[in-house]
Image 1 (tube, rainbow, N blue to C red):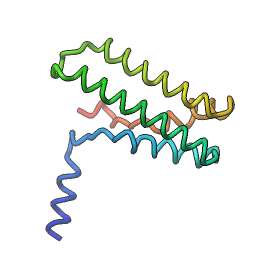
Image 2 (spheres, rainbow, N blue to C red; image 1 turned 60 degrees about the vertical axis):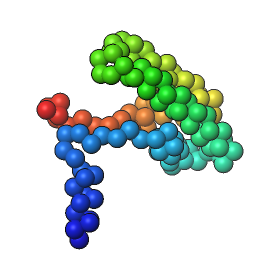
Image 3 (cartoon, rainbow, N blue to C red; image 1 turned 135 degrees about the vertical axis):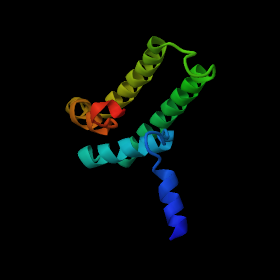
Image 4 (cartoon, helix red, strand yellow; image 1 turned 30 degrees about the horizontal axis):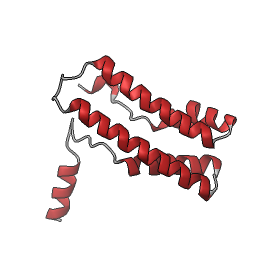
Length: 124
């Protein structure tokens, strides 16, 4: 019981404790959502999963490079531009494997449901 309490306490840090998911975890989440919505074939999923893992690894590497100077070393506009670049690349990958109506469903319904929800009041 004591070890369970320690694990639960350390994994539920209030106010912080946010850990970025690995590229593989992010791809698995997208894979699950797309599979339940569209039932893509295995070959399509293999290509999609591979392309997204490569993209997310490149994105993580770039974000690490930008943040290497410490907090405040990169302005907000630069970070937003980099994130948009990778978001646009993800969109192009998905457009290549989804039908037009499936992509529309992805953008309008599925993708917004995957965004982390912030607590009311800005979390302060």
